[in-house]
Length: 488
Image (cartoon, rainbow, N blue to C red; front, side):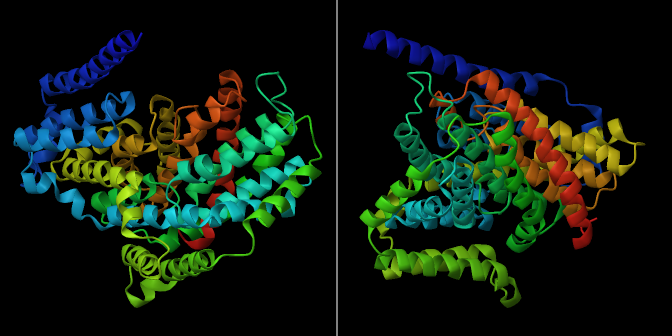
């Protein structure tokens, strides 16, 4: 049996890895478009041959990230090595992503989020809101969403928040209320709470630059492509109003179209009280974690006035946690998700920057611009944004999606007349909202779907409806808010 499973694994590995390599070879063998040569000739530093070779390696990397023959970090290390061996870039350029300040912002934020888990503060936050709003099923859904929202600014892993902290609490609650997949009672409370919380997490992820790992990647690409600097505060302010409206309406919508059978849940409040009693009063470490949390929030908001950027703030928060003992260096060493993020983030940021430098992104931008030119920037940008949103059906990773399409479509949007900051933020927000489309589109999705409480047909059907409603809210309410802010 083990030999058979081993053979299946090896066959799958060879197939998915072979597909990735084959895609890269096919692109490499396609003749370089004359339009790319024309764009490359406009700037002496650009090189159509190197750009096309890099595109082949980049697309093969994206396909590998989707098919996952190896972990993301392994795939990206291989890509870095291939770039250096084939002389597509120098070794220095291939490794330049590791010095990127945005990457270290997100890595430090992962370490900070570990403090929420280690001290138990994350669970305490969830139980506090559950105690306050948990007498009804609708209130329970809001309690989990608010908990997610409170933790999001300092937790860049939506998988850690939604999957690691909130999901286990929902599952245990479902069991308490006799809502189980095995006996067909999943609709009592489990299905509603799990699906609503998952969809809301994607909105929460859009509301802060540090709430999802691919957000800083989008900000960095905007800087590389347009020289546009998006601050933590600009992102948060722009997302606040449409985000709050989405979070307020989503549980109500699902309560109407996908209602739980049990509406009253007084036991949930008692469970939360019992858990909080077991945890006891705030520990010294939890109080210290709260202090660090507010310290970094204040510096992210007001730090730019004193020339303290977001990465420096994250470093200050991390060092404070190490100095006062919330974390020790063993915690840093064992935070695998942070180091994994560092590797794939460095590779993807470097390749995206080089695609821009060598002229591939400007060429793709010109191609897209020509296809929708003459429609006016509003209509053209709407077409581009919707195409970007719904193409996520083909991606199993928001990071891969952002890496593959964000930069080129942003440049095309600006070329058509869209205000740069407006276009950058809208596409960045969509990079989170589209994660709810499928049961494989983001880290927490397989966790929630794998519980069996929601069938695939139900998941996809309601996900499409929610996507339309979210787009409407973020375009209409968000558009008005962004007009007030002067973004367009």
